[in-house]
Structure formats: structure tokens, C-alpha cells
Length: 220
Image (cartoon, rainbow, N blue to C red; front, side, top):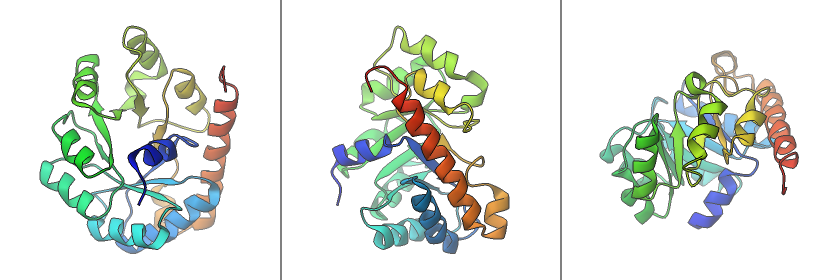
């Protein structure tokens, strides 16, 4: 069992969170193996995955401390409690739901609470959210994060949507501690073909790009 501090550290090293919308529960273990082999440890199993609660529980038992298994697209307090009971180490919601924070904190997990505006982001921060999920990030861009963090430098944004190997360095330079990557990494085509070799290749490209981006930052 990881501590909250260990989960926080794992989410930001190398800072790639794979957002997984698997086509079946059975895909979660092999795709996690491929992501791990490529250097991506954090796996967000969304609740759009069939039998997601069982998938999370199975992945936690299978990988132990090797992978960081979380839950995404969590929309209600009941779902929040259910994913935590299944063993999720971090919980991600695309919605502005600061009320999830005490539920997640009490379970010893890490919260990533959705926001689109500075006000929503500040509400989540004041509630104790560990990170702010910026979604859909491609509409706003890294410049938005830089602008918001100029007066509000305490906000720790994790952008999701439109993050690619080519632009992830811009997000890190804007001050993001991690990024969420969905279909650009775990694509529908990969899932349809169970092409785990291609998934491992993409994961390695993202992990390498993230480490290179961090190495180029001042003070790293």
C-alpha cells in the first residue's frame, strides 16, 4: 500500500498519465503491461471501460506497486466511493466536484478535480485537491496555464485533451507537473487490434519526451 506522498511522486515521474477507455475489462492488464514496458506507470481506467470497478481491482492485485492504478470519468460521489473501494490510488473527475476531495483524502488516495475556469480551479484548490484536471485542454493551450498561474502559482494543472509527444514539453514549461494522454497514446486502433507492441512503442516515446522536457527545465 502506497502512501499519499508516494502516489503524488509516482504521478509526476515521468509525468505521463495514460487515460484508458478500454473496450473490455480483459484488456486492462495487457495494456498496463505494455505501458509499463514503455516507461509509463500511471494508468487511469475510466468508468467508460466495461466492468471498470473489477478491472481496477484486478489491475491493482496484478501489478502491486509496479503500476499506479487510478480511476477516471468519475461523476458522482457514489462512483467515487466505489472506485476507492476497488483500490484506485488516484481519482480523476472532469467535473468541478470539490466535494469529492474529503472522500478521496480519507481513503488515502490522490484527487484530480476538474476545472475549466480560474474560479473553478481555485475552488478545487481551496477544497484540498491535489491536482486540477484541465479539460478539454486543447481548447485553452499551455498559454492559458501560464496566464492563470502568474497570479495563482499554487495551482497544479494536469491538462487532458490534445496532449501529444510534440507539444507535451510546452505543458511542462507552463508549470504542469503531469499530463493526461488519452487516444493519442491508447488509441481505438490499438485497442481494436490488441496491438500491445505499438502501445509500448508509443508509451516509450511519451516517457522519453517527458524526461527530456524535465531535464531541460531550470533547476532540474
